[in-house]
Image 1 (cartoon, helix red, strand yellow):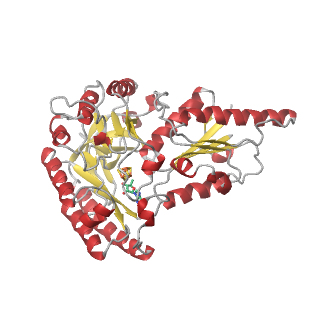
Image 2: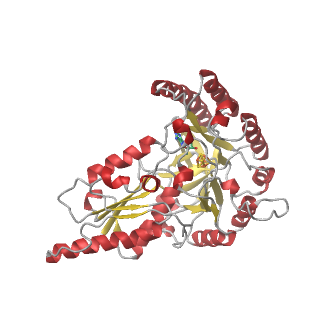
Image 3: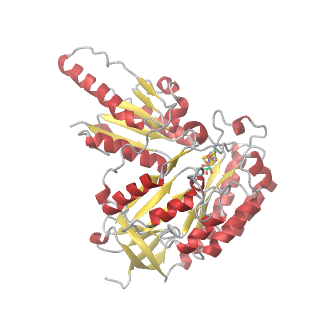
Length: 457
Ligand code: 5AD
Ligand code: SF4
C-alpha cells in the first residue's frame, strides 16, 4: 500500500485543504505516514504570506528531495506558493514532480498516482515509460471545486473541525499576496455549510471554526433578513445544529463589520467568547498606505462594542511592524492602541515584501534592524498583558473543550477555553471530546493548568 506524507505550512485554510487532499488519498487506498523518509509521496501545502514561510518550505523540500536512494518517490508542492511561483518552482527544486495551485486540489490524486504507478511499473520491468520524466504544473484559473469531498479525514476521532465558508479575497491590502494566490471571493451556500456541520456534529464534533479570508463579507449578495446580513444568517443557521456546542470564526475585517454581527454575541450562546480581529497598525496614515480603509478609531470602537455585547470576550490580533514609511511616531500609535485594547494575544509580523504587491515597490522600506527592534518592543507589551490575563484566571472555573492528549505529556489532556486559551488538564483520557468545567490551578505564563471541577482526583 503506498504511503503519503503531507506537510502543511501557514493558515487554517491550508490545514483544511490538506485534510481534503489526504482524505482523497486514503479513500483510494493510501496510508498516511508522519515519517517522511518512508513515504512514497511527499506533498507540501505551502504558504506565501511572508518570505520566511516560503524559505522554510523550499529548504525542507530541497533537503528531502535529495534522497537519491529512493528514486520512485513523488514530490509535489501545493498551496499559495505553488499558485504564485508556478513553473519557477521546478527550477528551484529540480526533483519536484508536481506543482498544484490553490484551486485544483481535487486533481492532486490523479496526477500523483499516475506518476507513482508509472515509476513503480518501470522499476518492475525496467521499461522507460512516458511518465518517467513528467512534470505537471496545474495552477488554477477557473472557479474552485472545493467541497467536492465533503467529509473529513477522521471525524470520529476529533471534537473540533474547520469548515471553509468562502474562498478568496478582494480587499487588496497593499502588503498582501493572498488576493493573488487565492483568487476572487466566492461564498458557499448556507445549506451546504449547514449540511457539512450537521455531518460533523453527527460524527462527534463539538466545535467548528468557520474559515474565510474575511468572514464578515460572507454572502454579501444575499438579501438582508430582519436587518441581518449573510454572515449573521449563516451563524444563526449553524447555531441550530444539534449536538454542536461551539462556533468560532476567522477572520473578520473592520470594513463591513456591522452592528448585526456585534449583536450576535448577545444572543448566540454557542458563539465562543473570542474574536481574532486583525488591526495591522494603530496609525491612520499607515492604514491608508496599507489600503485598509478604516481609521484606528473605528477599530477601537468595534472592540469596545463587542466587549459590551460579550463582557468576557477575548480579542486577539495581527499587527505588522515596519511597513514602508512607518515612522517611530506611527509605531508608537500602534503600541498605544495595543495598550488601549489590551489584546489577549497578538501575532506580530515584521513587514515582508511580497512579489507583485504594491507595498513591495513603495519607497521608504524599513531596515531589518528597525523592524526587529519594533517587533521585540511590541512583543514585550503584548506578552506582559497576555501573562497577566492568564494569571488572573488562576482559581476560576472555565468551560474547557478537552480535545485530546497533550503533546508534551500524553497522560494529560489538552483543551481550550471559550476564549481560546490553551489549558492542560489532569483528566482521564476517556474524557477527551467533552466540554467540562475546569478549575484553573496554575499558570506558567502562556499555558494554564487545571483539573475537572468538582475535581475527580
Ligand atoms: N508581511 C508581513 N506580514 C504580513 N501579513 C500579511 N502579509 C504580510 C506581509 N507581506 C500578516 C497580516 C495578516 C497575517 C495573516 O499575516 O498581519 O493578518
Ligand atoms: Fe490579505 Fe487584506 Fe485580504 Fe486579509 S484582507 S487576505 S490581509 S488582502
